[in-house]
Image (cartoon, rainbow, N blue to C red):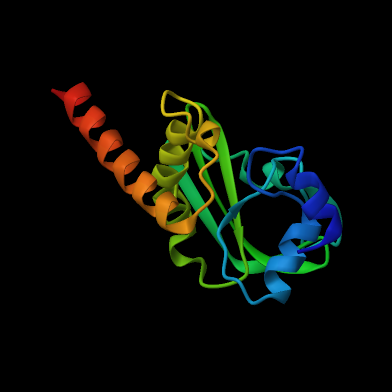
Length: 156
């Protein structure tokens, strides 16, 4: 992992961001669908660098678009896709197979919500300080069952 990304990990509680992180993922041959900030600079056909959000200003609410040709994001050629909701625009970048970029990204959202709940919204997983792998597995299994149970009770 790049040093700059590793040092930022201590300060950030969210996913890594930035061109250096994207370069590292690409160099490791790790396939990704990653959200990019709306102000990320992208080089267009005319050779000018513009914020990526400008490319998707025409999207209506609940519409999405995938750019099939790769664009330069920093020094990487990536596919870009966007989805506009009432909350704003989600922009996703990927080095390969752009067909389902937005759908793939949304698939992982359930995992993000689960971890957010386990870490801070009632379960407080980090305060257990469990470090033995077998105990971690058991604890995660119990917490997953508790999460599902609380979701079902909430729906009921």
